[in-house]
Length: 199
Image (cartoon, rainbow, N blue to C red; front, side):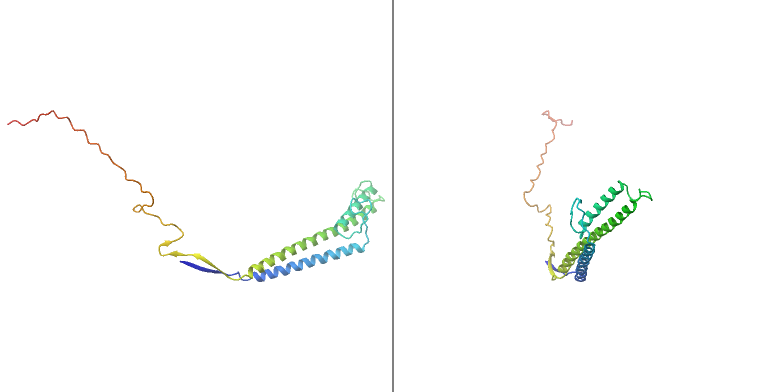
């Protein structure tokens, strides 16, 4: 005898999936919008990567890689002007101190834009992940109820375990009974004559 169990989707999962999906879309849009704003701000500065840069030489600074390349070139030029000394190592009356200070400010601004681009990429990645999770939750919650048939118990007991046979009704080859052999005790030898009591 078997029984049927109906499995229904959990309540509220579809709503949670919708909220997660919308949050993912908003994260993607926000990340893309901030990326565009930062890129346009850098482009408006009309900064070009120096010709002696190790990469992206001569290109306009409008993205994270060109901004990083230009920051490295600025640091290199500042160290060459100060003889390898940083801003903190220069004397107050040193004429190159102001040049090194301006170079530090420019490098900090460029590195800030690089960090902003990284945050935008992280937000877009999280948004895509939220979209996938939300879509999966809505798909799982939108399925119909499923009837699952489970095995039950019969009148003879549990059908899932085989019956055990008792010793009175063995199954298969029976063990032959043991043979007991008895050996008669040795009787004392008789002498052939019988003692009769005296009359």
